[in-house]
Length: 157
Image 1 (tube, rainbow, N blue to C red):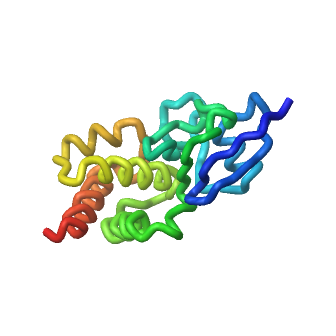
Image 2: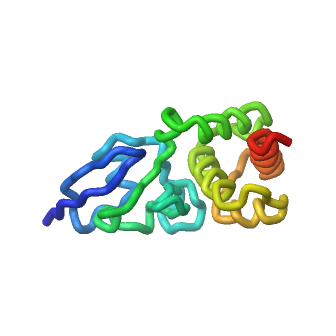
């Protein structure tokens, strides 16, 4: 059985029919072809599937697509339209905070969401905010450095 939902996706209103048992990660990837959202563990432990729901990081493997109704969903594809998110991605690249790229979309979205709410973070606070995102390639130091550098440039420091 399908249910019709309306929600905002990457800045645009969308109405879609979704099956009651579809997870948000599957709906985004398989039905909407937004493949920037990755599935890692499927149990909410790795954070690779993170999207922003009402500007907060959410593991899309743990959320049903029908729950997106009435919400704002932001995926990594929003990067192309959002200058600040794109600048954060450029900071990740310039600091070597990207290697295989599998965790990068989730890391970027989680970092961006945190920095929007916390414009002057301490390094330990940022580490704590990123604790739900696993990176097996870069370690976390370069990611932290990129985020702090981006925020310092944004704040004009």
